[in-house]
Image (cartoon, rainbow, N blue to C red; front, side, top):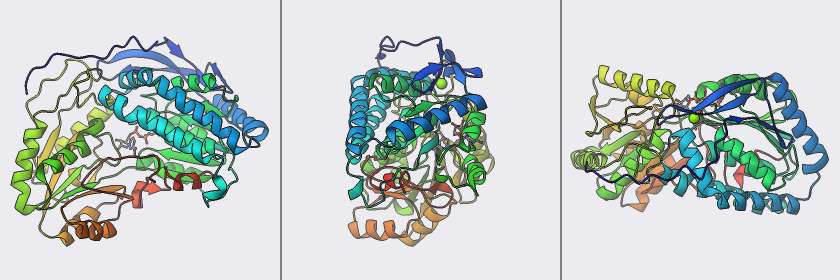
Amino acid sequence: MFEYAPAPESRSVVALRDSYGLFIDGEFTDGGGVFKTVNPADEEVLAEVASADAADVDRAVNAARRAFDEVWGPMPGRERGKYLFRIARVLQERAREFAVLESLDNGKPIRETRDIDLPLVAAHFFYYAGWADKLQYAGVGTRPLGVAGQVIPWNFPLLMLAWKIAPALATGNTVVLKPAETTPLTALLFAEVCQQAELPPGVVNIVTGAGETGRTLVSHPGIDKVAFTGSTEVGRQIAQAVAGSPKRLTLELGGKAANIVFDDAPVDQAVEGIVDGIFFNQGHVCCAGSRLLVQESVADEVLAALRRRMSTLRVGDPLDKNTDVGAINSAEQLAKIQELSAAGEAEGAERWSPACSLPDRGYWFIPTLFTGVSQAHRIAREEIFGPVLSVLTFRTPAEAVEKANNTPYGLSAGIWTDKGSRILWMADKLRAGVVWANTFNQFDPASPFGGYKESGYGREGGRHGLEAYVR
Ligand code: NAD
Ligand code: MG
């Protein structure tokens, strides 16, 4: 590590309020309770936020129903599209404000919110705006379902909102969305964008609160569709809650992706892909490449290069433009990462981290590498959802496939090799919704994303993403 001058982004672009209300029927209103959201980088309370109880959720669902029946459902697609384009443009105009607020509330580096989250958020609205008047050509049906209840996690707060809201609105549905309790602020700023774009009241409703608010929303009899992204455990509960009802359901759950490096891969590029795969967004990524499978003959070389590269990662202030790895989103998530890492050591894997000094306050975890990992170890099986990489080795392509697929999850995988024929052979055999070749963590609104097995079902993004919202 070498010293460098701090280069913090200014917070002044964000006008934080002391308290935030629910967004129902086009207006901000009080809720049945309140909770606090903190900045995980210094534990500062950022604001008090309204928590929606059953009566609030009911109001939101009724507002969404009325908006669907009277305004949004009957509106021609070409008119709906104009609102989506308008929202996309406002998001671009206010991108800096959103990026700073997202880094404050979530702890992720400004380099990521500015260069990845916000551009992708706007791109999703632009992409689905384009479909609004062309649904008859998509071949998936054209009639909206009605009211969608959407519950999202804290790892990409605004991006997951965009993945949920853009296709729902483009197809003529109205929504009630619940953000995660540790990251409600950008969703509430998005509510302001809806006002600014003069979106008809009730088309988008935001109900903040904890798991109980989510449970109330998904079990509300007035919604036609549930879309959820989060843990497999909660996904299972939701699947049970909607079973036997006419509600449609899509689930985007956890993952334990294999990033597979063959002996003919360009080592420096592969190392960049490994680092991006697991340390991007502090590893709080459902498709994170959390299991490195490296061919035995090049394992020493790849691991030496990886340790060198990890030693240059800058961990710290999320608002510093030099920061590569920010804060862990919450004390609970930090405790979970610590517990699983301790289990890795106890089970006999070898733990390594670069030398690194951390801020005194806030939630932090140094990028960590485990070698000597066996398939039976918990760190090879369970989703850690943090900056922790488990390394396993293989000798043949068949062994790589077998190890990669040896997981209850099936969201993503990466392949690093010089041979195109091997990429195709592997991609065909890997049980994963997304397979990247000689790259990792690439996202595009035109490309569908989603899982197999315990990673959930349904696709978000692309033409396939429309399917979840039409009949
Ligand atoms: P979670 O599944 O508990 O929370 C996700 C969302 O669901 C939040 O908005 C939460 O308030 C809501 N929720 C919780 N209980 C609910 C219920 N019974 N009914 C309806 N909604 C409910 O995830 P978490 O606690 O934030 O994280 C736990 C683990 O989940 C992480 O460690 C990670 O492994 C995984 N995770 C996966 C993703 C992903 O993108 N696939 C995202 C976040 C977390
Ligand atoms: Mg927060």
